[in-house]
Amino acid sequence: MTQHKFSFGLWTVGNVGRDPFGEPVRKTLSPVEIVHLLAEVGAWGVNFHDNDLVPIDASASQKAQIVTDFKQALKDTGLVVPMATTNLFGDPAFKDGAFTSNDPAVRAYALQKTMAAMDLGAEFGAKTYVFWGGREGSETDASKNLLEGLKWFREALNFLCEYSNAQGYGYRFALEAKPNEPRGDIFLPTTGAMLGFIQTLDQPEMVGVNPEVAHETMAGLNFTHAVAQAIDAGKLFHIDLNDQNSGRYDQDYRFGAQNYKQSFFLVKLLQDAGYDGPLHFDAHAYRSEDLEGVKDFARGCMRTYEILAEKVKRFNADAEIQALLAQINAPNAEVEPFRGAYTPERAAALKAYQFDRQALGARGLGYEKLDQLTFELLMGAR
Ligand code: GLT
Ligand code: MN
Ligand code: MN
Ligand code: MN
Image 1 (cartoon, rainbow, N blue to C red):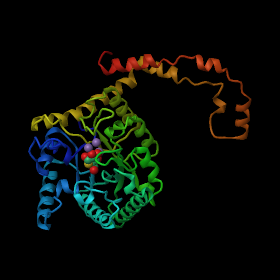
Image 2: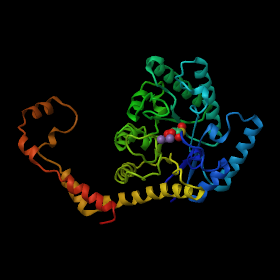
Image 3: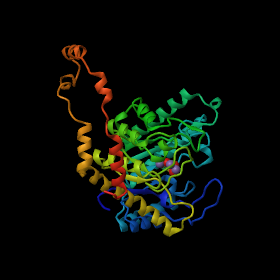
Image 4: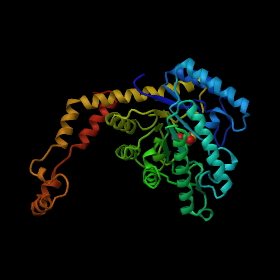
């Protein structure tokens, strides 16, 4: 279990099973208890929102005691804090957004709260700072000037990048998209939207993404494709792993709980690309579970990733699969001269070339066989 940087948020294994229709089913665990639980199940890191660790109304002396106790727990267990973030969604003050609230006082409070949370994360050595704008959105667009909202969001991130640099924190920011829930619509709803927005910031090199399996999947999109775009852009700073059925509320299931094959392709993408950042499980146990079930959930997330990573090795070493892929991707010497950057000669030669269009369309690609072999490999039938 040690080769991967598996992490959990305090809010994940600490989830008490409250939902919009029902009360908690598990008792609240203290941050210290959660760190020990994570150590017991073999995790590497623990992440937090400011208020997962320090309650929003804690006094200065309460905060100091909490920080001391948490540091001791990390020391006792060897767990690290790779990522921190701000709760900008729980308090009623944020009911109409934080950085994009129509109320300038709320926007200023959100900045103040985030600076304090960045100070807290830095104290524990966090290097990634996540921004999930859960309340940045609307139910009715009568309420919002959308262009102003985007401008306010940009101004806030620019301000906080400068703050991080001025303090010498060395944070990299990771923006997390979600299409809806808790707002009717959330701004910048996909990883691709975030990637576009990042390029409009003052310091785009400091800012990347934190895609979550459930969030693209909720919208019926292919999450693995979104992650590929993030990797291609050099922007995969962090990742939230879990599982989800399309077209439902944010289920945050145990990683791999629903879509085995798609989870495999995601792990394959991450492993083949050499992603070596944190693998954060932003998920929680079913509401049916007690504390033992929470441990089963956490162990299951990590074990599933390990099993799928092992399957990736087998896929890459499988002679029949690799032969099929080699055939599919066979080079073609005749068209080789057309590859590469534009030159007037290359363009002229390509324009003059005669393609056998019918032959191109007639060729079978063998994907049925490839997909079946993948299935059999995943099922342990080969
Ligand atoms: C919340 C949300 C997640 C975000 C967390 C970070 S909090 O659980 O549903 O997707 O990653 O703010
Ligand atoms: Mn989610
Ligand atoms: Mn969630
Ligand atoms: Mn998440």
